[in-house]
Length: 430
View 1 (cartoon, one colour):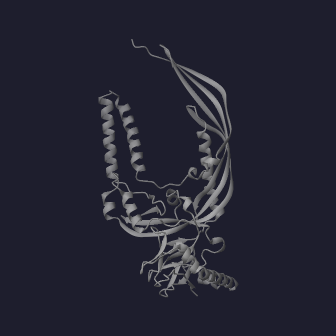
View 2 (cartoon, rainbow, N blue to C red):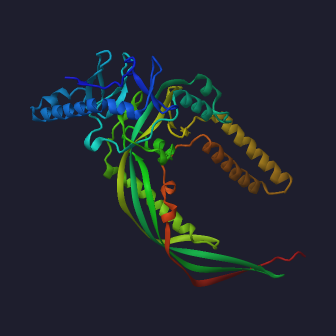
View 3 (tube, helix red, strand yellow):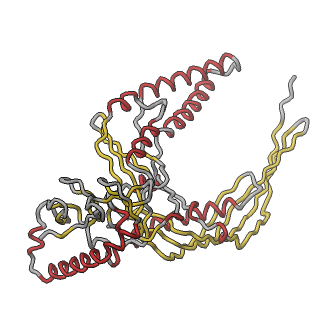
């Protein structure tokens, strides 16, 4: 039997309500009435409570039945559930982790009751601040006038899908304690008329410190690419709201399917890497610093369950799919772009030819030296151009989430160990 879904309806005309990012209100598509989240939440509190109770009763009933549930799930719909749209009566089939969306028949925004109850109910939500038009404008800006972007991609790629999704995240608090030892070197050069004296002084630098982290995010949906979600960080946590179903009206929403324990590994690694950087950066006044020993421990604190706003945009070009994501709160757009390989190789060829011409013509370098220099410059140019077309990657650090006021370097000790000296004769011009 299909469960009932909830449509937030306008108290004035019964039209469907949706959350509008610009006003921060629930708005009616027909009479343009506006209502606060608190007002609608109060109106539907009793209805949601009844729906949650009904879902619990249905789940309990299913557990007492025989193996029919296994048989009925043997088709391709395993992990799916059916719901009835209260506006048009259509039966909706959706992922068991989906908490909201819209009816494909009448378009009414729907909230699946009971999907966010007990342990599944989020602690927080950040509402959308950017709408669909802003997402499309953001994608065009992302394309920009990039030198290596194929002209045909901008003109012939077509939009397959655009949707606003509340993505589930775990947010982790924690405290890291680090104890690291470094080899630090000071280099001094002194010249005489006949020789250059190079002196290297080696030091043992010890650093201990404590860092406090607040709400390191890790997306909790296996359907979302981790690198894409990491790349749209950070969110402004000052705008975290206590969770309410009303914010979901008009958007898709998923509940987590990656456990808090499983995702903690990502947060811990980011905290450790940040601790490494902070301690190493404290070793100053040297020409080079290299780690010798490290011992970093992260004590995990509270974990919060939150829904974050994301616009997902999918385009297709030459039978290849390109997925872009925009932070629905800050407007940050990410997504790797294709490269015009013909233009890239032509650019590198010009760079190589120019460097060879300059080094051999003006500075009278040997051809071997000129070619090596040209290839090095071409490699640098390639890396710079390619980097401009790709901005998606796994987050390695969590420096944005460090409470700087609570950061403490508890031990500093720099000990001189040894000195090495090298003498290089200076050739005299005859």
